[in-house]
Image 1 (tube, rainbow, N blue to C red):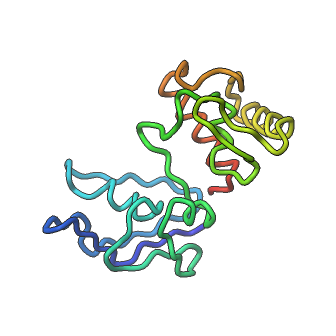
Image 2 (image 1 turned 90 degrees about the vertical axis):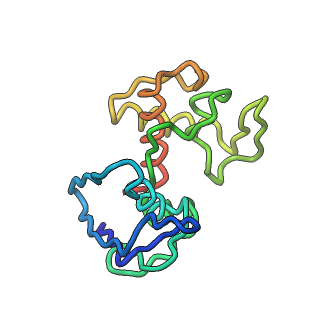
Length: 165
């Protein structure tokens, strides 16, 4: 996948967070965004991943204009964001957190966890992915009992299972 940001500008009131930012990221490459606090690094990544909208400019995935307005739009296009502080639900189980955002969930309650269409399939898929990355999780553990690093590993597996590249 090739990601292009072309002439992205983003303002928050009178504050100019991104001013005509352009960059290209090729699949398999590693890039670092460097700058002082307040330089707009997080803003440009949030624009790319649909957490905030751009004021102007264009986002392209594999040369095609992408209309990324939400994180779900980005994920459908193959782009996800791993946050420094995981976006998870600590009271729920590891498996519940893995399944967040999927159509296979029938109902949810913060107190009772998620109800899956096919709980055995959900568990098998989770265990297959964790083993393929050599991660070790008990699907029944509470996320609140995991370290920050383990919570990030869980988010990596969840994003990859949703098809992000």
